[in-house]
Image (cartoon, rainbow over all chains, first blue to last red; front, top):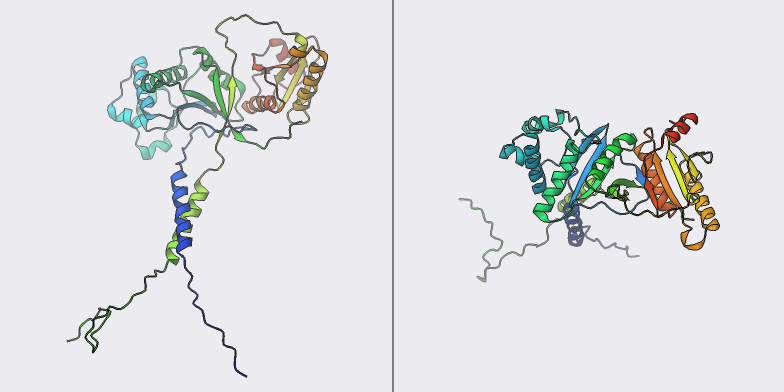
Length: 206
Length: 179
């Protein structure tokens, strides 16, 4: 009886196609990846069944966390222009380096009087800088009101667009704090804004 | 002397120079490994659930426009108290005793749906939609407000507003122990 010989096949497989797909996916993920903004407010947003995503551009956000208010604008040139206008209003002059630093700051929560020292702090030591929040009350001349107002003016002057407003609040935050922000917006006739929420599965509509 | 002969071919007797045919196949295993490693990394770091935005329009309180009278029987007022509890009543404040309720499917949502049905049944056709006034108290949280606004979209109530709380409602919340 002749012995059955199993043909020896090479174990090497053609990996070209796999490699192609892998790099294609890699490129996709690299391009869609966005650096995560470190939010100093640490706000955990409440869930809602709303599905509309938050816009990426033309937005200003007031974050509320731990009874402190933080302010963020998406456009860099608007930030710089708003800082200049705020400096004029509160009698603080900022150097070009400080303006540059500020235009790269995604989100901040310091009062005007300590903003200079905040911008002069070494970026590595910024984590230790305690941000005390932007002062705000229900009058129409407080720092939060003016930040929102000057940013809107800057956006109008630079891009001729209207800045969208959004509120990102911590779910544990008490209502009076939210009311202060809302009244700041109402005082400058900003009646339409967005509340940032996380997604919760919708119940069946009856 | 020894020489390094790296040339693939060699002089054959015939005199023809033939280059050695090197295989063009490269071992891709390491490259694929690396690619998948990076894919895994980027997949985990990308946030798939982007934050959502809920539109909110506050009533314009700067101009006194002509207001249309709305039957009090069509309005439902929700007072947000502490400890994740609400109080609601139909019509004018103080006329009827408020009901203490919780959030969720069996709490405020059920009340909203039932009241909307009652309003639709007891009023004439064009003006039979219910209107809701939300009165958040100082002890309610942001989560309570968002949940209530969310209930409006779940129960298809289009006319609602966030209004300042009345002192008598605060008293009532205190009486019910949710302030």
